Length: 241
Ligand SMILES: *C/C=C(C)/C=C/C=C(C)/C=C/C1=C(C)CCCC1(C)C
Image 1 (spheres, rainbow, N blue to C red):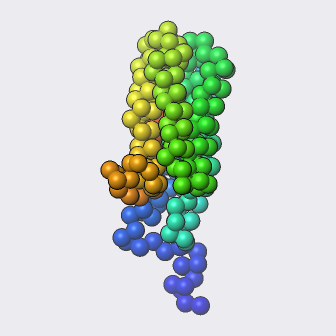
Image 2 (image 1 turned 90 degrees about the vertical axis):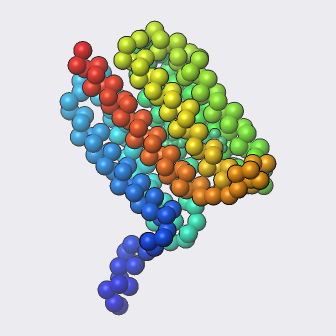
Image 3 (image 1 turned 60 degrees about the horizontal axis):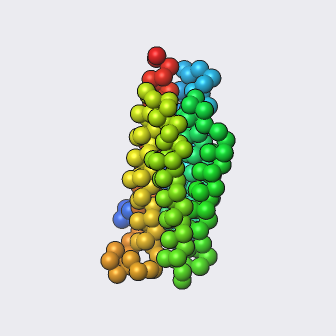
């Protein structure tokens, strides 16, 4: 066996023009570096904030492991790793709901708020998976249901119970809550856009088709790492007071 054959067996080949593969590769590194950053910073925080920063690290760490699998899957089969993608989201999006809850706990957030948001996010993701992988003929209907659940989350944090708790907490908590709200409204909106690029529906005539994976990979980097950094910043600032 030649050396190069041996290498291709260990690491699936990545072509220089494979932009999707490239974003998977960069995604692995970014998620891994972010995880190291969050985990190694834990010691500087007291108990009250340590859990929040730990959850930030868990989100990027879970994503890092999935990105290694997704990168390899893409390189081996040239297909979207839809299954791994959704497993990643089903684990990490509820953890992002946990972040909202942990921040607002100081203002008296109840577990019912957490469960409500987790249920919305699971409806959003399970229906999205059906539209992409199980019943793509009806992608626009599944996408619509998923979109409604997404807006339920947006409503909850911008105008519902969560926003009232944030207002009651005030100060750094309110400021950080607002930034996270923008992440969910703008950063998360990249996902339905990616979905519309990858499935057929009324929107296909307008948007055309594109790479879901590039959209999802960019969105993940912004949302998982950015979200974590907002929480990290809040912990740093709150501890200084
Ligand atoms: C770290 C991963 C995150 C923050 C993933 C978020 C995913 C979404 C907000 C997905 C939303 C979708 C819709 C609103 C409609 C179409 C189907 C989805 C699942 C792509």
